[in-house]
Length: 410
Ligand SMILES: [Zn+2]
Image (cartoon, rainbow, N blue to C red; front, side, top):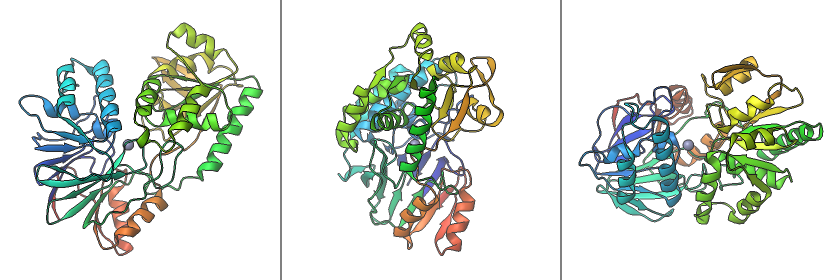
């Protein structure tokens, strides 16, 4: 089997892996400015998408430009999320050189889409493929690829612990080669129930003291997870931004949720904001909790809310995940100020950060790989892929971190 790394090698973002020149796994973009796409030109016979995040599915419509019509295989949830992301990318960049597709191509994706459940094998470009729950977001999959000689397990992004929204990854199908993500290879997450308690306690305290809490969340996964956390801890909240639409979509596929009823209850506990800025200002004046995109303050209604609440020390901004270097969220954590909507805001409100990660941490990655001690391990999708590969080698694995553009025979 030949594996070519077109993106996501020794980096996060824009994942794309070509197997035997025919089968493409993921086609993501890195939402930097300008957005970064996988390298080279690719003309696959078939495509499998591991999950509906921008860095894995964001560039998929570019695969059906020109005469190319490769079938695109994914779970029903991944399909819905990928379509939403594509429409959002068109809104942000459509018609510019930064966007390699148009709404025609986005519509065309629906004509070549083929959806599958977990553990139902299917054939793509001469390969047998099976998807397994990866426990990252609804519909996320480990992708097992068999070309008749070699079995490759592409982990995609995964989490081994249960989240409220999705159950953790349990399947460990036999494989000769494992291509693993390594996002949190050097981090240990705190215990999830303790993290939830800390979050709930802090949010409640601010509300008792008469403050407003803004909780920046990603649209996909994090909005729903935090809605469920608030619901479970009897915390009333507003929900605003793209996550509202995503919640509706995810509820259409209850088989890919851990507990569809719990999500339904969480949604009925939350108050959905329909979206005028006047309404947002009135909500920001209340003694309440607001879950809103964007998770790293790169845009969205979060910017409007923070513009209303930043001056009062009784208010709070509770970030819910890792903040990438160069984002306003990171700037806020490091300096106490952030440039939002072109204004530099010195933030007097309290700023806290909670690690509601949807990725396996160091122990999670190692417990997953413990099932593959005899397999060849390839490491991608992380800040320090060579470092993780080196530590695996020290523990007896045959492991390496291919470079961008590299072609590996396994
Ligand atoms: Zn992801």
